[in-house]
Amino acid sequence: MAAERLLILGASGHARVLIDIVEKQGVCDIIGLLDPRHAELPERMGYPVLGPDEMLAALVAEHGITCLLLAIGENRLRRRVAQYASKACPALGFHTAIHPDSSLARDVKLGEGTVVMAGARINSGCRVGRHAILNTNCSLDHESRLGDFASMGPNTASGGNCDIGEEAMIGIGANLLPGVTVGARTQVGGGATVTRDLPDDCVAVGTPARTVKRN
Image: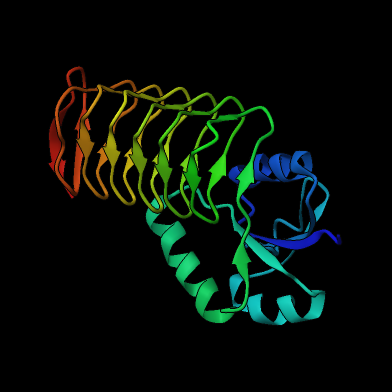
């Protein structure tokens, strides 16, 4: 079977991590990247930055692209670019990038375009939405949910039966006690410990985590 021909949207440092994952998966040929800074950033890890996002449809046709991957760490921006890409190229799907050194239980469900980095663990019964990010050495425990476009930072951990809403961001080293809910678009600061439910659209920090700002 021929390898998928992959175009990556975004050429930041986050893209370097995704390139490494895709190379290790060995199921896609990376054709290049798109980024608004293409003039000052002509390549990333040996792959060409072919132009800005506005050239997406033309480059897909020119290079025979068969799938896309978003290399955009900021959750809300990642959603906007996904919406743009789906409108510009409705026939294309998004690659799901899973590092071979991650661990997924056999009944885990992952949405398309999600990224699972090295050392991440996703335990039995978990549901992960579209275009989510599970960063290096994070842990999503049994029967938890991570929403569309949400992200778990490096070395974060949830207990079982947690519910993390769409576009929520769990900062580096933060922990969620079993059964807590983190609302949509809420940001949990690095090193925080979430001991009770957090509402939508807030910023929470500390141990125990407390709301310090409403977005």
